[in-house]
Image 1 (cartoon, helix red, strand yellow):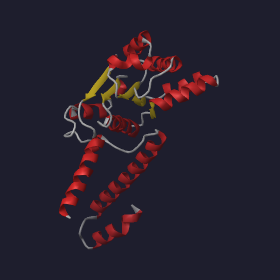
Image 2 (cartoon, helix red, strand yellow; image 1 turned 90 degrees about the vertical axis):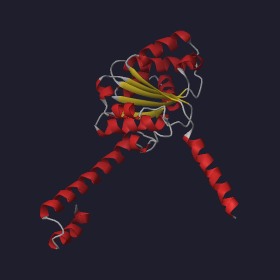
Image 3 (tube, one colour; image 1 turned 45 degrees about the vertical axis):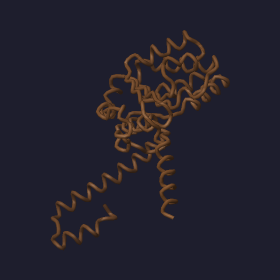
Length: 239
């Protein structure tokens, strides 16, 4: 409001707007400024990789993704219902983008939210287990209303890692919501966890009360790369 006060004062003096209109617009600017500051703070605290919302997602490029469904998830009813969300798709299809968008929406509404890659999660749990403070670390991850675990399926796990992840999943089951992104279909999860019994128990808890979004489409990164190549070829033809 302070930064824009002189401009609006001049407009009121010139009768370009009423005092009430100026006060309303200045208040709107102040609220917008505070919201931006709050979002930046939430992004940092929640460990999001970047600031992206569902409005930045190219639904036309990924028609397999229902815009209506994503908007419904951004309404955050899934948190109240303690439901999970699992994005399944090949690399570059926007799984992390959508998971982050939903996470940012939940953080803005003051639901405790945390983002972490699957690899980093397992590393932290293993380290805590080695240092005899596993329960404390599990409590840290269990407490969040929304826990986003990104990139499950990029590496195989040993028995310790599989058991640690199962413990976390079991503790969060029907208490809070978990969002997972994975490039591996559920039929192949046994290969990742290398234990069919544990895999079935894990899937039973994750898929119960869950929204599953299968993204079947091309990679955004490949789209950008092809666009760059086409531009280079076009520039060469013009020379």
